Image (cartoon, rainbow, N blue to C red):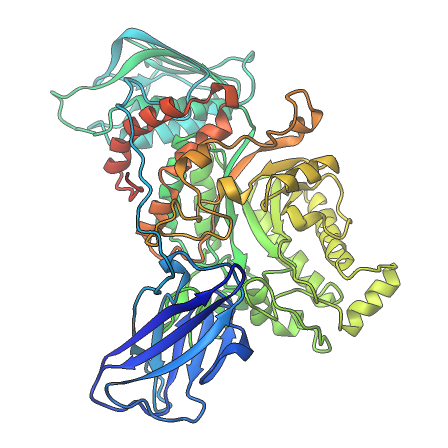
Length: 639
């Protein structure tokens, strides 16, 4: 048996496209009582389907013949439908995966999916020529780099001198990394010639490094500074390790004075849409530390998956961590024909937090509320479902049942219980609560919500979002945590200026939040969303809802550039963060292709003031980093 699915754009306007979907039976047997399951992230207008019966939950679609007719051998089933979005331009916008069910049997039959037949697809791939590498290729560029004549040579007698407690994590990290090069562990001895020393006059995060012929000096006032100094030292090492004594390990003699532009330099990884292993996360943390990021924002919950073990509610991971044709959560984004998922145990989380801490990285968890909660609601319906709510809505990801009710006592029991366990796992003084993409129409036809609004004197249903977020903000404050949220966290006008806002839609959102007195961490999609495709070619991996994001555009980012340098609102920018949303990141190769080398550009944007950046100089230093990326086996975008 052999089946093929084709999707073709028939016609399109700026706001709507018409498609032809054709299922081919290429075999010699009829397909009786068939049902096609396929993944398409765009919402199909139900009334636009010309033939067959179609249902859609999120990106999971099912289609069957309306008359239950068999699909004869060497024949096809044809239907048309419309979606109301801008024109598709990437192959990844089409059907991602498909399978067939027949004769009411549970076994999924494989279907070959061809790339969507686009109107006027772009063929030319965006390329970038890199100049010759520099002698020293540090990324991000240090504020001051002085090259000296000579080199420091590691020998069997090289050792670490006694070091301050604040440098312990950096020492652990350096020892682990040097194990790839040296044939014996780097010892600690009073006569050691690698020196971590405290210098109280340096700002937090700043460092001074001096590599001499016989000594290496790493000076800082804090653990953050020692971590940054260690990252620079590791980048001075040759790209290829060797354990052969005749090939001595050397680093050039330099003197560096350096400090970051921003205190928050982060990356968010979405582990809810697709699950990423502990090994993959640790490999990412290695690169974040090397390029002087100091924050790993861990997106652990969403509509499509709950990834964190909660002792009080085992159903969250027994049910909410898994998707599949027979699961309460249907397949989404990929793996249409089988069970898929995973979660992190508390011990795995503690391990990752400690691993990150050794590398100078804080881990901020995200528990996304009150929207993006479908996995939690499906896991705990007895606690989280308002049976009397008849509100009609559809979220941006095509769900009608993914919003917590601010009027249910169970919502607050759930939140406090989960937050208690999450706060115990993560020592960072921050917790992110999402707060994004609550759709219009929620809570409007719930008697309990209407009663709560009357009781509190609320006039707009979105004040209920502020109601629940204010509760969480106060609860977290009692635990010594500050609440972070996406730009919608201020919607409903209930949270205080103690909440930190992450504007993501555009720069104006950041300016609006700063105008209201909030501290902001800038994360505009047009410059920092690394799941966006890197060029216009149809073959490019990634999304394009916020445009395309080539390396040069990433590097060009300057937060709130329209403000005068003296504008006090610039002081409200705590930092910059990038994100990898993972709706369409279903392989290690794609994960790395989207991240690298753009992650290196983000690191320099976070670290260096705009006047210190130079695009041509960065390209040369990037060229010098590629041999390292090759050595560690990263599938970065080439050309």
